[in-house]
Amino acid sequence: MKYYVIDAFANHLFEGNPAGVCIMDAWLPDELMQKIAIENNLSETAFAVKIADDGYHLRWFTPGGEIDLCGHATLAAAYVLANFYDTALMRIRFTTLSGDLIVVRDGELYELDFPNKMPKPHTLTQQMVEALGMMPVETYLDRDLMFVLESESDVRSLNPDFTKLAALPVGLGVLVTAKSEQYDFVSRCFFPKLKVDEDPVCGSAHCNFIPYWAERLSKQEMTARQVSKRGGTLYCKLAGDRVKISGRAVLYSIADLFVD
Image (cartoon, rainbow, N blue to C red; front, side, top):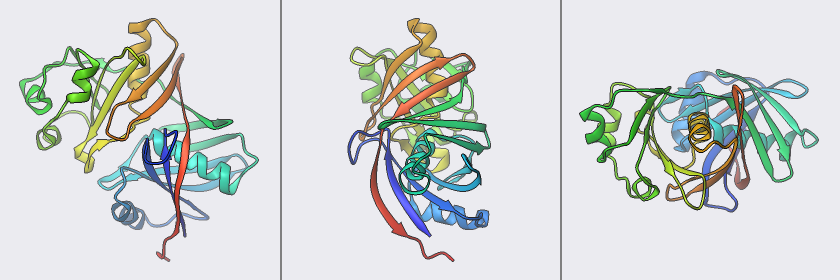
């Protein structure tokens, strides 16, 4: 089986977030896909099976289990399909655990159409402060905990305790964000509960970030930067109950998996 590694939300190699991608004729057993994701040891491996002329069923596995939404691995899957399988496709529809997701190819950019997930205000606890190692300005909760920090420098310098983050009783992941001078906003994302301490660039987190910052900045279109060690740039739009997240992708490797 062919296996691709794509740096998503990247302008060049070794930037953005690497995702594994497998395009299959039929589904493998869930247990085997989970073992592949663990063996790959990337934050996500995407598996896709064609179900229509423009449509694929898409699933995402982390080393810690299957998840319901992943932006960078969706972009990576679209890149592989557009460059190696259905090269004439400019619009790809993915059927996922989060409903139908559309990716539109526009030159080098891939635009993801994802759900708007404005997080709800949440009570800050001392346990959260100790896990972060910093006092946030605001606290929100959707699938993940989201903390707004005072400044971009706070986001960049944050050094959380991953064991304590994993022990938090709410939130699958932990997202931090702040206003930026060079970009509209910056962020970092942590998923120790899924055995991913820091996710280099998390597209799905921007389902939370985009509506929040659109409201705070009174802007419908924004440029975001995830300031992990690898870093990545995302071009964001608020579109009613949807958000549009665009980025580039770069091929790192093509391999064969001997799992049959």
